[in-house]
Length: 359
Image (cartoon, rainbow, N blue to C red; front, side, top):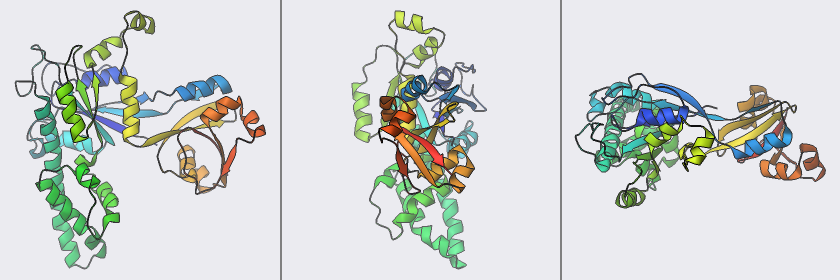
């Protein structure tokens, strides 16, 4: 199961530099807008200490980590929803990703121009969020027009989601993001239709967001951090230029200089914001592999991620938590201790489960 994270923000805030640091992939980085036109895409391993410990214990011939995809998207400008700059392309690229890393420029460097002439993090965030919301409003208004026509023709399915669409239209016109709206207790007759409707609509402002505060070494961010915390935004401070420079160093040099990367935490935050978990399989003692799925996935569907037969022909799952397996010392020892569990088709896979699917 593949998940992707879009790296977005205004021009010259450090998006492509962050992409390079995360993926170790060479990309064009220049001091002018729209250096990135076509999105850069790369797959990054998800840091996983449990996988390393399991590999040390089980000694498979091959160990395969799970991964997540990062997409470096062209810089957004004010008026993007009307096609300004590379607006249409930018917004189309965001529609394809599962979550957003929004890079917010904090650093002040006279050699790196700012789209609006001055560094103003709060204003930059408002520009991006406004453009996403305005594009969503445009999308909803078009769908509402078609939905009302379908209702007149007697389409009962259209009638089910009309109220949800009208509520979302109202909230967007009030300047409230869709995510904020989703967190409200909705007083509609069709609350259960909301999540389904939003998924079908692929609205941009429904994407979960982590704000990456691109800092210099010495920054006083207390006021800005307070604003983010009050708003309930998830954010992480990253010295992106330093992270890029660290990619040119080996582990010994990094340790000698007393440097510490924040990128592993950022990757894990992306995993968390999408409500993702990791489970493991060991194939005939040969390949230990980590897999990604969402919280709330039942055993047969998790099996389907490994192989379609595992879902279609599922009988049961034999499993143990990774930490308990490490404590036992081997799969056989865990069996003898009675630590292996047998679960059926209604079992929800848990983070850290090591599973053998029976078909």
